[in-house]
Length: 129
Image (cartoon, rainbow, N blue to C red):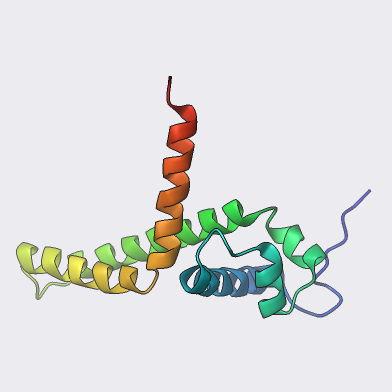
């Protein structure tokens, strides 16, 4: 049996909805914290049904993983941009990279702190007693 695409009826494509979900998820995590935010909260803000959001993300951990992946891609973009500027010395390039990275990260600290907290929980779960 083929799974029906829940986005076909209203004309939205899955890639556009993923971007909206990630942006909204990031904003909600920053506002309320990862422990409070649910897929239902994100779905409500984006105007999706639970069926639609569940077709893209099974749980909040998947949303967080995609957010962290997005942040890593942005960092790689910053690195590529600063290291290819012919007007900057290696030291200036390094300093500019950190300046841009810190500025970017300060806008998404809620998401990054949530990822750090989850990683600590996972590490504790795997520690030998």
